[in-house]
Amino acid sequence: MNYSNSKAVFFKEIRSYFYSLSSYIFIIVFLTIITWLSFQNFFIIKQASMRGFASLLPWFFLFLIPALAMRIWSEEKRQGTHELLLTLPLTEWEVVLAKFLGGFSFIGVALLFSLPIPITLSRLGNLDWGPVVGMYIGAWLMGGALMALGQFISSLTKNQIVAFLLTAAASAMFIFVGTSLVLSKTGILSNFFYIISTITHFENLNKGVIDLRDVVYYVSFIGICLYLNVYVLNQRHWK
Image 1 (tube, rainbow, N blue to C red):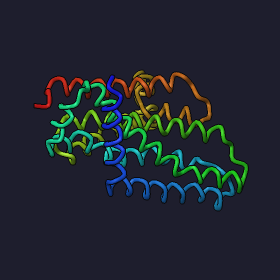
Image 2: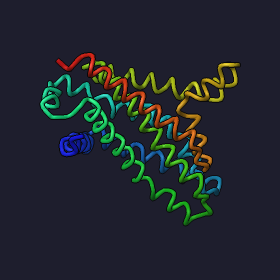
Image 3: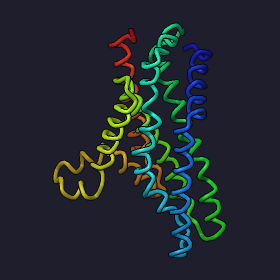
């Protein structure tokens, strides 16, 4: 593996997020609403809890992560800059992984900016840190899964709007099938929907118990999406 060129692609992705207006909108909207909900619980019901944060997070990701992921390959194809990537001594896997790690890291940074919320709540009340740690781990993994899904879908089209809509629709499907409304009405399919849904595994981690099965699910989800991304690159050869 050519680490020098992989790092160059990785840092190129990181810079593209921090030079993008949509990225700052992502962080500002995320922190503003999440902060309001978190402190609402404390001042209204006098409870130091991150439940409002956790319950809304998957639905934020449903719209905001597609907005981040839509440009990963669509913009490269539209601008023709993918040709530059072809001149680098990198395999498709190395390029795909470097791009994913850039987006995954940005999601982690956005979550880190929200850490003052639980720290402040813990000083104002008796905050249980077990579920908080599990929630952050689950949020980062779920965000990575949806980012990988969006990256794969972005490789299918030059149009960023199409990439956004398809990613949002696919993400909504993986979230919605795990809601109690669907699980309670799908009979024998409920176990299958429970297993494939991104939100059910997040809710498990949000309880403060790190179950290896939930971690394996997210890692597998990410791996499958990245494999499909590589498959698309191999099929089209970007020519």
